[in-house]
Length: 455
Ligand code: UDP
Image (tube, rainbow, N blue to C red; front, side, top):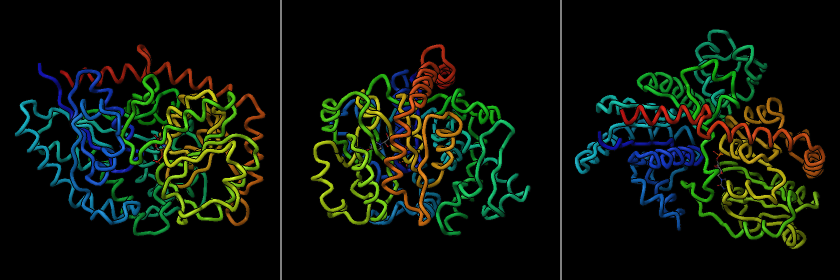
């Protein structure tokens, strides 16, 4: 039989593009052809940031369709982005599939769609793409929560708009970790309109994934046994990351500043605090200053990712004199090669916003965490890190909601002064490495998935 031709389509956000592109690279290695569909806006950024990673462009057909927004519109407004996607992308995807099938003798045989892009599975069904899979790039516990929305409404835990009726802690099953209604991901937007759009998207996706034959996730049984027990039709194939081929992952929206690797080489083993908050987090000036002063106060070397858009004040966002005072032991970059940084022997701990990709990257490299969640699923990921796997600590906020410099220093000391965090982190690293190696659970699922694509 011919080579399977997979069309892969992520939700247009950084934390979705990276793991699906990683999966795409794995599929190529296993003999599939992949056409990867980014939004036009993200496609440009990804291609710009690829620089020397030509292996990606030569192995994967990177294409794009519009996300329905104008180039200058705000893509961090997820309500608006979602509405535009639903309105415009299905038609554009249909056209793209027709065009690819016209020009390529190897027609598209499979689709792997982000589970947040359920409509793409419907398009695939309509266009008779016979092998359909949904990919869940986050914690399966969060998928389980999304699937449970109708029950949460029936049980009076949330109202029909998704707003919690009261603040409480729930469990989706007796073995599942506790979940606080305050942190339900769809409630994080601060406005009811967006909340309703996201909740509607959730219910539409839950229906759409019924036309998928496989539901795979970037997680593992070892990390989330209870969530997989609750939804046994979701199969883990992760953690997917370029752990054995560092530097090869791609899909970044910002160019990596890899000069920090040389700087890391010069730091003592297990000394550096790595600080990064993913692609979305935004700081107000007060909190940004407090973080800078907290890092200064630790008196340790630090590598801090300060994205060009991380605060509103970008001229010189740092406290007065901070850069001079910390020049000898602090390093700021716009975007780091994070997976390589976390694998570096100089790194001692990871101050993280607990996005799922950052979470599995920290786990896979045996790095203890200091958790600083910002929104959506990050609060729940923090409970996995601190309460379930016990490989990190959270920060306390003061009465005005600020994490103060002294708190930052204290928690760094506490984490690095207690070797049991590192010991548990190393154990989890081993467990997750095993599951993606030949013979491991995630690897078996992945192999079966590829076999099915080739049938
Ligand atoms: N990342 C990176 N360099 C940075 C910051 C982040 O390569 O300086 C990557 C990180 O390795 C992860 C992704 O960006 O793969 C962020 O995804 P995550 O789910 O952690 O957070 P999100 O951006 O979705 O909030």
